[in-house]
Image (cartoon, rainbow, N blue to C red; front, side):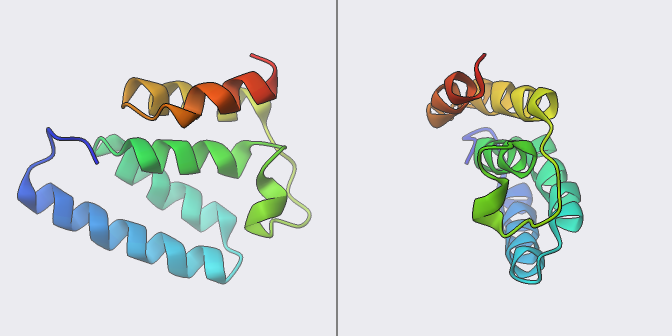
Length: 99
């Protein structure tokens, strides 16, 4: 979590991430993306990284996203944001995508 997030935003972020987990359990990737994006806008690097994974053709299978096509460019954009927010794993994912 971003150290600049205040206590109220941290609680909102925690609530958002709990909602996204329920959506993923139901296979609702599109709904999860909307919530991950909101959490990333709060400054969550973990949410930006997870959002990138929902677009990453190399990772969609791990989310149980059958029938969805990945989008390398969108994944790249969110992995870059995750990297800016301090997620070191984002650089490895960018490399795996060929960027």
